[in-house]
Amino acid sequence: MGHVEGKVAVITGAGAGIGRATAALFAKNGAKVIVTDIKEAEGQETVEKIKADGGEALFLAHDVASEEHWQRVLAAAKDRFGGIDVLVNNAGIYIIAPLAETTLEQWNKLFSINVTGVFLGAKHVVPYFAERGGGSIINLSSVAGLLGAAGHACYGASKGAVRILTKDLAAELGAQNIRINSIHPTYVKTAMADYGAAIAGKTLEQMGRDMSVLGRLAEPEDVANVIVFLAADESHYLTGAEFVVDGGGGASVLSV
Image (cartoon, rainbow, N blue to C red; front, side, top):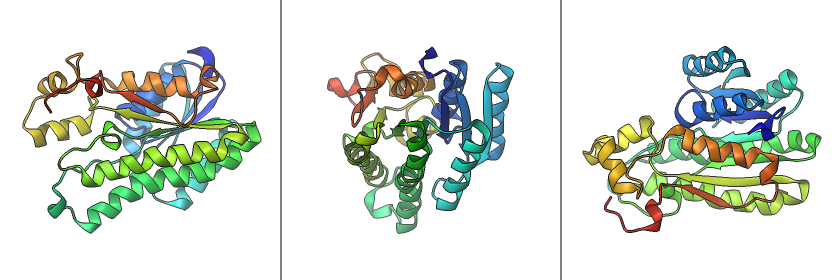
């Protein structure tokens, strides 16, 4: 995927999981990467892995719910690499709870990260994209933003908000050559899948058989491949679209 060579990509929540895999794949294909995460040790580890493989990366501590942090991070990215071409809004948290047991504090915290973080990133990266003649934003939603599930009122609502926000921004910003697309993964082999499996009382292998016609859960790299493609020049006519990475789970009737 040399088609992202020379691009500058900011990736939130890149200390682990999908974010780390995405940062590594961008760097492997010649992009310069800004790794952001609220967990500094994990973010620094991602950067060290990229540098060990010959890539260019910078870590910045980042609370995506903070407007001040977004302003600081994007300014630092430009200072280091000269501009910004790609924003991957990957940072997010996951709560499974019945409606009656979901607290307002949980709701507000999750929305501040999963939705407000995406809004702030898009709002503040647009002027940097304008300097480059355009750019690409990839927002991480979920299959939970497309389909309902018990215990997912809070999380699903947040991911549904990301889905429609993506379309609104695509409509608004297309004339500036700014593309925005959303990714909708099923469970991926990350800490979120571990949590979901524990709540369901299943192993990851059982979850994979139940949720995918391929009989397995997604690997972080399965999602990263789609993200990097949507940042590449070859996807220049794709915007406002949903890319479902679910191993065919949504295409058939499966027991969940």
